[in-house]
Image 1 (cartoon, rainbow, N blue to C red):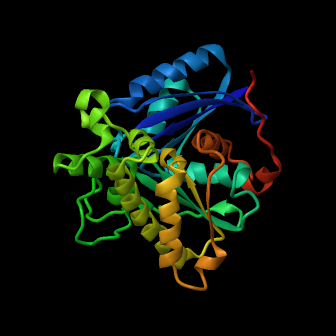
Image 2 (cartoon, rainbow, N blue to C red; image 1 turned 135 degrees about the vertical axis):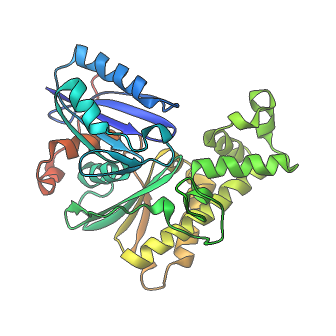
Image 3 (cartoon, rainbow, N blue to C red; image 1 turned 45 degrees about the horizontal axis):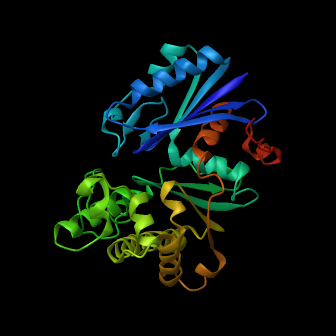
Amino acid sequence: MYYIGIDIGGTYIKIGIISTDWETIKICKFPTGNNPMEKIIEEIDSICNEFKIKGIGVGIAGLVDKEGNVIKAANIPFLNKFPLKKELENRYNMNVKIENDATVATVAEALFGQGKGSFSFILLTLGTGIGGGFWFDGEIAQFPLEVGHMSINYQGKFCNCGNTGCLEVYASARAIKDNLIERVENGEESYIKKLYEGNIYRATSEDIYKAAMEGDHLCRSVLKEAGKALGAGIANLINIFGPEKIILTGGLSKAINIYLETAIQEAKKRAMIGIAESVSITQSSLVDKGGVLGAVAILINENLKQFPDRKLKEPKN
C-alpha cells in the first residue's frame, strides 16, 4: 500500500508516492500554472493506475479551514475559496487531508529533518511567497503563523493578500524578481538582460542567484536587500517566540550565499541580546521532499511523538 503526498506552491507542485514504511518511491515536479487542478488530477490518475493508494495528503501555500477548503491562496488565485478536500474525495473515494504547506513541511522537519529532537523550532518556507510553522513540545502549534504577511513596513508595498508592507513583498522569490525588473527598467545594468533574448520578465530567482554568484552587481544587490528584509522578519520571530531553531526550506533556501548569509547576519544583529545567542538558524535537510513527506504524515495522523523513531528509506533505483 502507498500514499500520495502533494505539495502545492505558487510556482511549482510536487507529487510523491510514499510507502507505508517511509520509502520515497518517486517525486515529480511541474509548474503550478493558471489551473493547477488539471495537472494534479492527471498525475493522481496515472499513479492510481499503477499503485494501490490508501490516501492523499496535500499541503498548499494558503489558508485552509478544518473542512479542507482553501480559504485564501494569495499566490494561487485559481484555488481561492476552493473545496479541495471534497473535490479529491469525491473523485477518488479515499481518505484526503488538506493542510497549509508550511504546516506539513514543519511536521516533516520535526519527524525526519533538522527539527528532530528539538523542543521548539520555527520553519520558514521560502519560495514564491513565505510561510511558517511552529513546532512546540512534540506537536505543531495550532495557529496560522502567516509569516509572509507580517508587516515589516506599514507604509510599504501592496501585497496580494490585501495588506501593505508584508515580509514576502520584500523577501520572497517573487519580490526578488520584481525588484530586479524594476531596477533594470530604471536603467541599471545586469547580465540578466542577455537571457531569454532580452525578455527580463522570464528571469527566475534561480537565474538571479546564479548571475549574482558569477559577480553580477545588480543581482547581488537585489539578493542582499531581500536577505536583509528576511533577517528583519526572522528577528521578530526570535524576539516573540524564542525558539531553539529557525529552519529555512523552500527553493530560495538553496541560495545560501548572499541571500541566506545576509538574512542570518541581519537577524542576529536585530534580535534582542540574550535571546538571539541561543537560537540557531539552519537550512532544511528536506528541501526537495519535506512538503510531500509532511502531507503524508498528517494524513496518517499517528501519534507524532512516536514518529522520531522512524527512519526514511532511500528511493529505489
